[in-house]
Length: 416
Image (tube, rainbow, N blue to C red; front, side):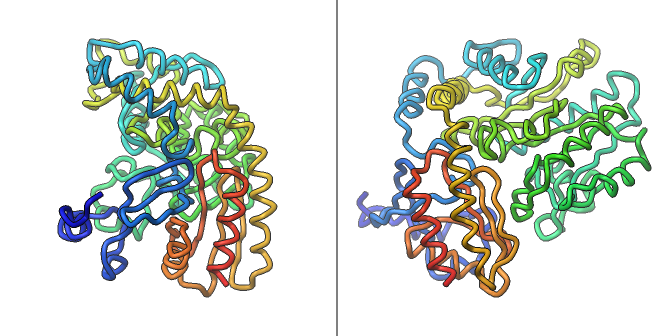
């Protein structure tokens, strides 16, 4: 690319508002200008090669430039680019909805598509509220969530995943929700005590299953999720599981909730649904809920690009790759190696809370500046972004063992 004619770095500094980025981290000039991706790697306009240690915000599960996915986008773009799902349909949305329903413990589901994870969660919140109106119980509109959870940046999703350091300016305009203590030890007693106080007020509880991502990759036992699901079922409270980050093999099973052996009422998916190649997400809803939305109770909600044909065709190809290349089974095997190699950090006195779940690994820095570690790793060809004092990796599920070992070696060198 001819930078003499096009000064992208100058334009970036003059006009790009970088999400979740402190201004101070941009003072030394624009960030790497990524121009190409291949496999586990990204390449910038200076020819530098970087290992994508966080799957480009947790979504490029099959890596970059997968030939089958690239071909599918091109193929579909010549057939049908866009058609709305309002009083219309198309084969790719119909098949994708069917396949997502079949991935659930029972296939009695309807699927409402959207473009991103926050929108999928927003839909779930509105569905849970209107469901109670539909069945004549409008006062049951309260929600509960896990303290420190993150579910997206739209107002409803932000209400369920309020983080003080992220969302303080918006606190007064958010929905009030009850916060359940983070279940580090797996005990359900504290959560139950809170939930039992207002059982008849709740319409739903929403959770990130097994790992709270933006809170710092905080991990909790599947047994707690199982107990929560039982409580919800006993008290007629909907359980919404946010699998945006954990879905499609990240935790070693297709969905994290499978490890708790539960059957949620609503499941939100996104990110890896398209392996990050195009924006698409989905809210997967039990038919017992869907059936209450009759002509007198239509859900007046939708997105322009809901179920876009190119994105839907791509997602179908992603699911096909998962099946044919046995991605989840391979991830489970790779996760055991990651856990073994990551454990070496337990010996470092400047590190605590070393943990892994599937192909996610994290540790907390005690006396090391996270931003400096990020820069040192960038110099060594590794791209990642710490969460507060938490350093974590979420590489593509297709990462080679040699690349995974190299990644850990370079992190160890940077920390030293």
